[in-house]
Image 1 (tube, one colour):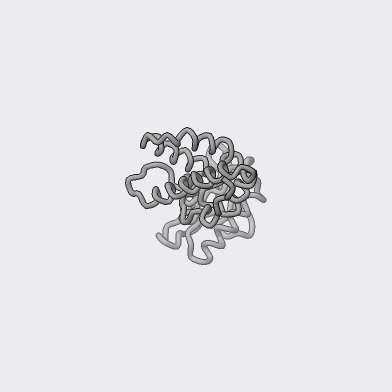
Image 2 (tube, helix red, strand yellow):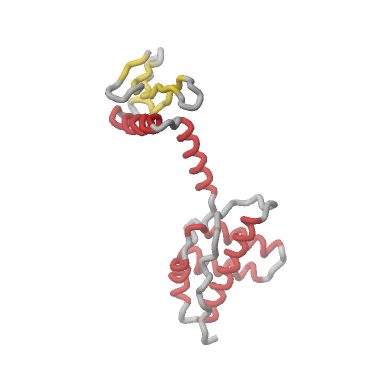
Length: 193
């Protein structure tokens, strides 16, 4: 059963034989020419007012020749890709794992640097979103000890270089970091060692 619900063409309520109600938008796909029922949510979890907003947005897409279902699938795919982009902590995890695979003694030290300095300051940020200012802010508390400051900077720079090399490595099966540049570039080592 179908009931129209207002001023939006194709917007209405579909009622199942069992009495369930869903807000829907019926339209003809611009791509295929087929009739499509686009679900906007089940009542009462979604109110009429809440259902009108995506119905209007879908109608606007149709008015410019785009299919709302295809648009929604593209948005979901983009969100999936976004969710897979790694954080600074996950970048350091992969970098430290690489050091361990290569039997580098520095792996344990880098883990300590990460735990003590990197993670509290920028660990939860997406690696691709970290800017030079974020790294400078992370390094600020290390300023009184130039040797430690320089080690944190060096290993942070190395972790980003590692991440950049992963982006180019077709054999890499881990997460992606979507890195295009190293935010540590241009940050000077401290003197006084």
